[in-house]
Length: 100
Length: 244
Image (tube, rainbow over the protein chains, first blue to last red):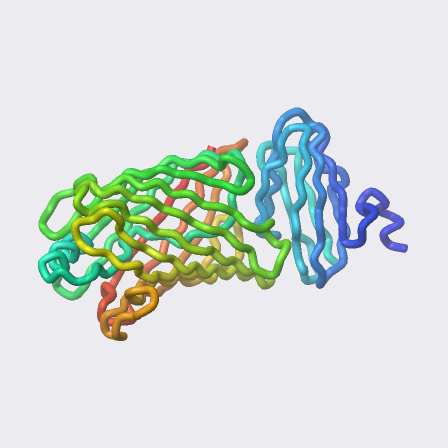
């Protein structure tokens, strides 16, 4: 029921979540994921310029090329909020993973 | 100069070389960032008893060629044993990320370093080994097993076994903290007696500061204490990277 409120966060495969980068913003910017299990984030960059997914909370750092796509594995996470940014455009590219 | 003094001594005795990690050594991590460019400064100083301190530093430039391969070239300098600061070696480091970070319980990498000492009779020093990383909550653990040998050297060289490890608690991006350790045990398949092995460990700090866009400064530093007879009593080491 809860995930119905956030349809963009779910993709076909269980435990796999899709994020897009457009106009240097993450869509969605809040990603609800299950706690205590590994999660796969598939990030598509629709911008022409590269972006770097960076999160100290998640201990992840990865480049996504312009018009490119990448996969980032996170977790298992304790319930809580974990922020991430697009380091090349930190003013706009901000997001949160919410483990629950 | 401790390392090369040792070379000379064992050369005279005509016995196998014993590896000696430098004071500016750092803990390798398996992650590679594609397209990352960095200027990398490392330094370290170590002291035992009343002996003059030995120091080493290096300045390198590195590049993440792709998502699996990071390469870096260093100029290395030394200072100690009555000699001023002098060029010591050039080193080519290659790091390979073998698994996607976080996909498996343990992240795997591989490092290969090739060093050409200024003194060419020391041949070519090759260091390689697997890199392991494990994360549990906000704690990151690294353990690396390294093999080191000199090829084409005037003094006969054996493959030596070294290790390094760190435990890092992810606190805030500008300041994480934990422990680091380094050691050399001797020939890889025939370890030295305990009192001839070198083991060092101590507290460490880590951090990064974004300068906007691609530019970022990262640092890590540790104060290591010798926990075996063959290790220096104290060793301070520091690494600062400017990424752009």
